[in-house]
Length: 269
Length: 279
Image: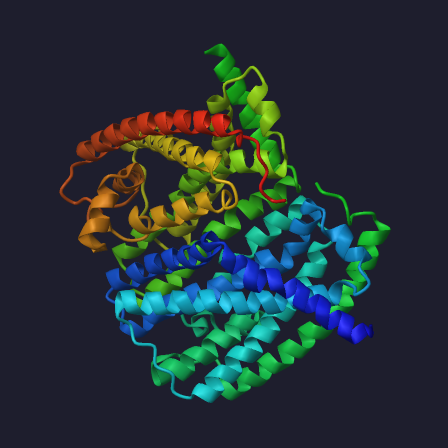
């Protein structure tokens, strides 16, 4: 079997439990959809209690969908090797002939598609519950931004995964630390321009910042205070996707080497 | 009683070590305050997006709710996570359970350790709200007994909720670690943490009125905020708020203990008390 075929088969094999296995258990679907939705509904009521217009309510619903993606990247990509270490799978991954990259690609593919389903449910439920219209002005561009953002986001997840390879208990706490601060910096629930240009520019290293801003421009037009023009944000996302792909590859090699050398690959606690 | 107290103290120490000794104290302190402050700033920018820079009394409501929320999460989720963590992660539940100590006291001690670690976040968020956001927070000397009474009763209520959640976790396998999160998210929505419960639709408002957390947050706001601030239960006097909180906490404590006892018995009968589910 050629290395390419082996890698593709390994990636598809790793994607399978995320695509099929996670949907077999209805409880996962419930928790992955209802939990972010509950948080978003609470924030919708904050906007409603302040008499905010509908497009701000839609921001809170979109924030819930973005949160589903971020949680997936953080807990099921970045921290996945930590869970695998706990479960004893990591050693198995290390000795299989395909290497770690196809396994991470499979995790990304399966995670992205499964989360897409959940995010769609969150947006649909939120929009129906609160009667908020979610118009899309340029569907082609909207889909392009969304797709590139997903590639960049999961590239970031793979980069994180390599860093988490070294960690033990810190992994759990570090993943926790990347919750609210990231929701804040990426403007999950409000226009990111409110943070000021330079803070928003720094936060653009997280692909969701640019993606949310571009998608909101394509949905609400002049009502949304834009950070950068949509086309600029799309190209920046393309750049981030490429940069994270390269960074992930280099970081994975480096961290794997370090983890082997320091004997941390099978260190559970 | 003495054994229970000793168990509680030891469990508190253990909980504190589990929470804090993965890093140095400075980083741990930073870790404790970053998330709540991040949450508060999100709400601040939301308020500014909706109402402009003059957010008014709504900001004070948000600051107090956000400041005390980590204590709710710590007390309620801490107890359930102690069960899940000991069973699934550390795999020590069977040893703790078979030791000659009170399992309930052990869980209460573990949860109290989390409440203690969350109090730094409470203090820093209140300080940030007052000093940076200019929210007119106050704690007058005459209101200190009311505050202490509300705080102690509220923490007891949160522990009772935690006991009920832990009861559920004892009999749930695969998704046990997500159940406390789900309960926390539901409470976040209906307990008036971020907005007065009067904003909610009628059925959810009824649920909010039956939860000790809603009354606890209301009591804390009555102490910390000026009188013209928004309230979840504007018809109730300060004493009525405290009395309702006490009655609800007593009811929830009784229900929590009963639910935990039943759940514990069922888990033992089914032989799933220490069954790991990750494999």
